[in-house]
Amino acid sequence: MVLTLLLAIVLDILFGDPPNRFHPVAAMGSLIRFLADRAPAKGKVQQFIYGAALIVIGLAVFTVSLIVLNIFVSQDTWLAIAVNAFLLKAVFSMRCLLEAGREVERALMKNDLVEARRVVSWHLGSRDTSALDEGHVASATTESLAENLTDSFIAPLLAFAVGGLPLAWAYRFVNTADAMIGYHTERYEHVGKFAARLNEMATFEEAGVSGKE
Image 1 (cartoon, rainbow, N blue to C red):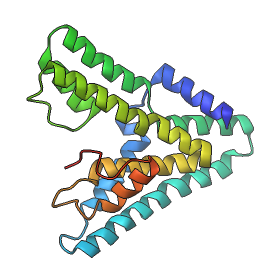
Image 2 (tube, one colour; image 1 turned 90 degrees about the vertical axis):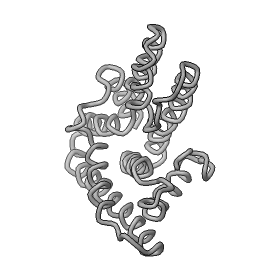
Image 3 (cartoon, one colour; image 1 turned 90 degrees about the horizontal axis):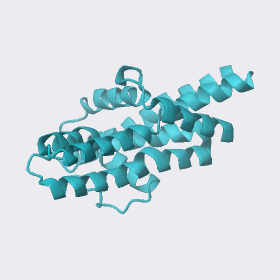
Image 4 (cartoon, rainbow, N blue to C red; image 1 turned 180 degrees about the vertical axis):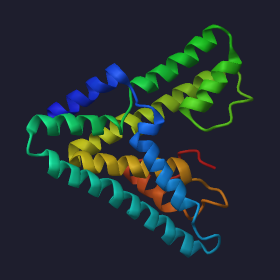
């Protein structure tokens, strides 16, 4: 496990994230979107049950596939370490997170507020940044980096330490679902509630502090 973790961190430092079309988290997002688009239009209970089933289905798809894969590669220790390191790297990110922060810093140093707003909105969160001044862009960047450090680095590695690769991927799926459907909107209020609460439990987050509206 230690060798797998160290190799995964080295891969992150050297290469960062793979392109979206090859990124497992993008596949998670596609499944979540596919299922969420088919959620019941009405009925709080029905929507909540559907949202819980969405999570169970996603966890089954991604964790069971990892278990099966590990059965095939477990006969060769070094192959198993390499495969598991690659798959672990896919569910956490530090290099790309720091690069996004540096992009904002460079834009602010050049007094390019438009670009700084764009980078914050695109790389660090889905918030509306169009009205932010330089101070608020800087504070939004700091807040987003701190939040993403937990969600995208510390939490998945802690999950890996506790339950191996399947738990790390399970955490990442729940976190991705929360980011996509865990909002207080008419469409997702009840469909995304299970994902939001489960993610709060996984990251020891106090209910309601995420700022989703």
